[in-house]
Length: 225
Image (cartoon, rainbow, N blue to C red; front, side, top):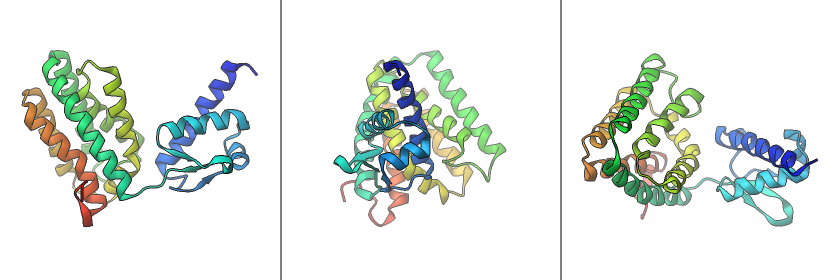
């Protein structure tokens, strides 16, 4: 097997394992033994270890020495950390994006919002994290707000943190029964961005990010509590 073949196998395995982690098919803190996991995904031990190492670098898997790997656990502390760092990065990304954004950027925001709203209108009882079409449209909208910031690394970091919060958003969205409220929260974000209301857009984005923590762990809503 060539290095390229092994790399491709590792990449495919990482994608499949990530999908199962995010979908809940692999439960938080569950053990990912090399032999069992290799058999489950039909891949050899070497590309599997590479795949799991890549997921560990992204915070989705924990390496436990010679005992293998475990799916990253979920906790209020973990979510609070995601919220804190994501808020810092997105505030800066929004600031830069509002400074540099042009008509095409505005159009992309409007288009992403329209598609998200249309999907929800057509699926009022089926929207939420875990629905592939909704997931893609939701992420596209939030990404569109930051797209003009001019920093590929900042965009990538924000996208990674968005993905790391996915399992928590699934818990939040499971109890989200008001499509109108959800749509409105995204409309006001889009309006603030297009109007170049930087401080308002930053505050709205920060509150939007923190809402996951407040809804999943209502007993202690503050990231610093």
